[in-house]
Length: 90
Image (cartoon, rainbow, N blue to C red; front, side, top):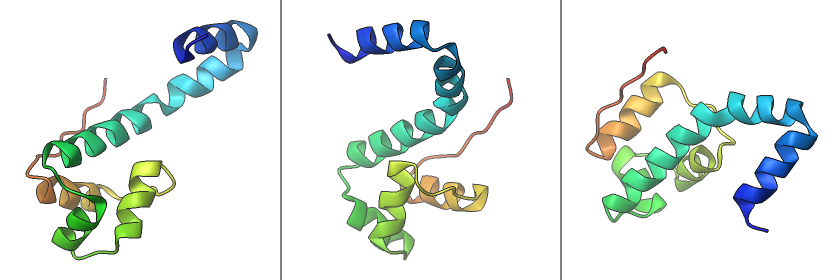
């Protein structure tokens, strides 16, 4: 069984799990985009941290989802990656 099959079965068995998964989706979308942008720039976490003048552990926590960054910090990271930060309500 692959992960997608596992998720489908788990969501059927526990609808509350699906609700929680959906609630976290925006967070993980940002994390995936951040990691992909860093990889596309051929940068390590340490290199990005050095560019931002912060500790590598901040980038690690951001990418693992254990750090709740401010919009100012996210904008700073985006700039360090040569990107723009766009936020929208849908």
